Image (tube, rainbow, N blue to C red; front, side, top):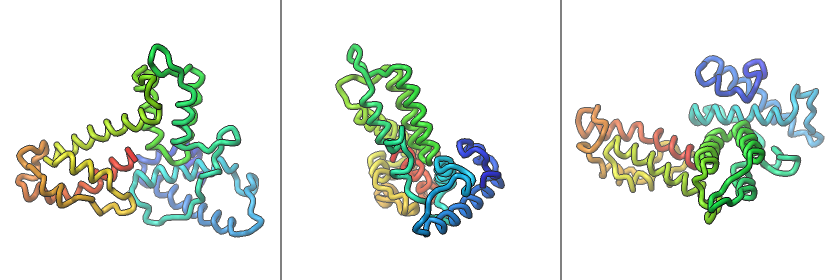
Length: 255
């Protein structure tokens, strides 16, 4: 596995190389199966020397796998991966996840002239933890958090009378509405029904589109920005084929 991806933090380099990507996915699955087998022994304990790496590095390989599989779509050969909850610690005590980072930022912000702000050292720590979140398999959430911190907090766009996590949720919702609007305009769909569909979409059921009947009935071919299908019937057929992937992409980005 290590030979297919020497540094798990560099997982994005595999996205442009299908052969290298497949080699890593296969090698990781084999390693995960072996680890799952070893963990069945009641005396199981992680040993850096025996396993060839420390546990934190293994968790980064798990993260790389999760990030890559999430990009490529549902894993055709799923493997059992131990939950990271309680395993990835910050300063030996705190689990790193999106909620923890939001709580940390909220506790560290200062209010200056009615605006939320953080000092340089706190910002450095925040960015380190966001990168760690990406490394353990939550790259999409990490990118969203990083963008919010850099464009809203650092730029002084957050008023002091709103909780940081509420501000983040409001910001995500506003961005989601913009993206939903762009997708709706492309196909000539009702924005409200499409937004309801995205919010109700279940990732484990990627081919099931909530409110698909209402969405289809709302199609206004003349208002669609993309009329490449040539007529309304073909337009709807094309739309229903590609819409699941588009909605999944939005769901993954804003969940």
